[in-house]
Amino acid sequence: MSELDHPRQNQLLAMLPEPEYARVSSLLERVEMECGDALCEPDESLRYVYFPVTGVIAELYFTENGASRELALIGNEGMLGISLFMGGESIPYQALVVMPGYAYRLRRSLVDEEIGRIGGQHSGLQGVLLRYTQALLTHMTQIAACKRHHSIEQQFSRWLLMILDRQSGSEIAITQQSIASLLGVRREGITEVAGKLQQAGVIRYCRGQISVLERAGLEAQSCECYPIIKNEFARLLAVSANPSPLSKPITAITTYGHAKDLRRRYAFG
Image 1 (cartoon, rainbow, N blue to C red):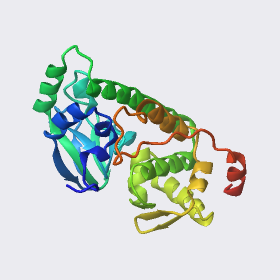
Image 2 (cartoon, helix red, strand yellow):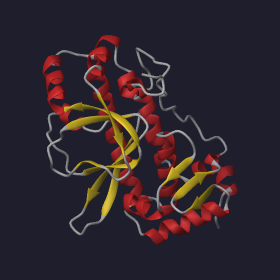
Image 3 (tube, rainbow, N blue to C red):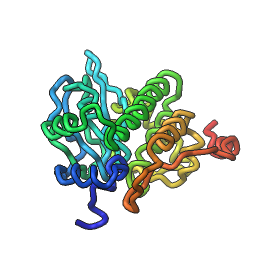
Image 4 (cartoon, rainbow, N blue to C red):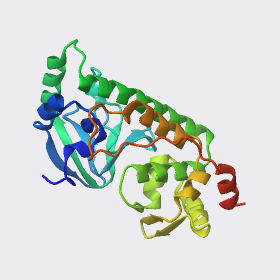
C-alpha cells in the first residue's frame, strides 16, 4: 500500500491511537465511489460506515414534492454512518457521492462488534467520534441557517470552498443543475452567480467543469458560515495524540484580515 493510498489519509482514522488503528484498519475495505452513487437511502438500514479519502459525499434531504437540499458534505475529515455509533439503525436522508474518489468502509456487523467491545469504557475511537458528532451538528445547523439567511451567491461560494477543502486541486467537475439541486435553488440562479464570478476572474466555468482561479475571491463573496464550520472542525479534530504525516487536518481560519478590501475588489455591483 502506497502513501497515496492509505486509511490514515482519513483524518478520523489518522487520529486513532496505534493499537485501535491497527485493529480497525485490518477490518476496512477499500471501495471506489463514482459520482451519483447512492451509499444509503432514506430510512434504510445502514450496511456500512464510510471513511472517505478522496471522494466527497453529500447528505441530502428530499421533500414530499421531490425538492432536495444538502444537509452536510463529508470528505476526508469525517465519516458517513455516525448514527450507528449513536444507537440508530438508519438515517432519514440520502447519502450521495458528489465528487468521485475512494473510501474505506466498515461492515455494520463489525461496527456493532466494536461498539460492544468498547462497552462503557472510554476509548480513542469513542472520543474521536463524539467530537466528530459535535462538529457535524455544527455543520448541519449552520448550513440550515445559511440557506435561510444568505444569498445564492454566498451559498454557492461557500459550497465551492467546502469542496476545495475536501479534495486536492482547484478543478471541480459538476454541472450547474447538480449544484442547484444540492443547494435547493433554481438552476438559473446558479447560472447567474457563476457568470458573475467568471466575469470577476474568480472562477472559469465550461461544460460541467469549474476551475477556481482566485480562492480569495470566493472567500470574499462567501458568508460567515464557511469559517464557522471550518473553525469548529479544526477546534475539535485537528489536534491528534497520534499525528500522522498522511493526515492533513483542516486548518482553522483565525481572521480574514483584508475581508472588506477583498469584498470591494470582487464586488459585483
